Amino acid sequence: MSVIRLLLAEDQSMVREALAALLGLEPDIEVVAQVARGDEVLAAAHEHDIDVALLDIEMPGMTGIEAAAVLQRELPAVKVVVVTTFGRPGYLRRAMESGADAFLVKDAPASQLAEAVRKVLAGERVIDPTLAAAALADGASPLTDRERDVLRTAADGSTNAEIATALHLSQGTVRNYLSMAIQKLAARNRAEAVRIAREKGWL
Image 1 (cartoon, rainbow, N blue to C red):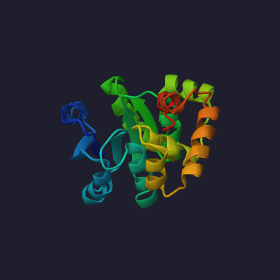
Image 2 (cartoon, one colour):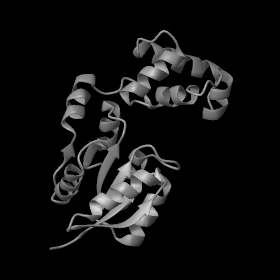
Image 3 (cartoon, rainbow, N blue to C red):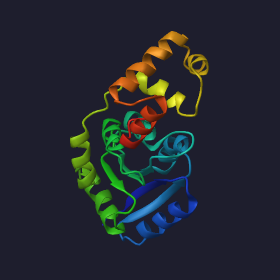
């Protein structure tokens, strides 16, 4: 029986250690590396010659979705399983576009996670069925990349001038992007637009 070499990327140490312990009970899975930051994933994947990367979405340095895209580009043979607390349809769509092979929520049973690892290595895709249905119902994000950038930068309460400086845009352009995003999301203001986009997983 060949052993699956797995990298675990999760910023919460208690969750990471619990996942490592649970997966370590499987006879054909070995957790060979653990990292707490998304920007440490690629180096660890190279160093430990992994078969599968198990990535959380919310991590410092780089999100799991961004790390999945880097792995897809640099180490295309490595399979990627994204696991998240946030069961948002937009996250699922973006994870799949980034090259993830599986997308599961963290409250799935450990046996389901281990089975997903085996399935992706066999060339299958594994997607949480509830999320898949929600993603189809929600459709793709209506926001352009620039509108998303402006909304994301506005999320912390930044003024138009601060957003313009951060994104190297004019204030008028920032106003236009914000106006379009608010209109597309049927929001009353920028704060509501940010909330809606976050709930959908579009930011």
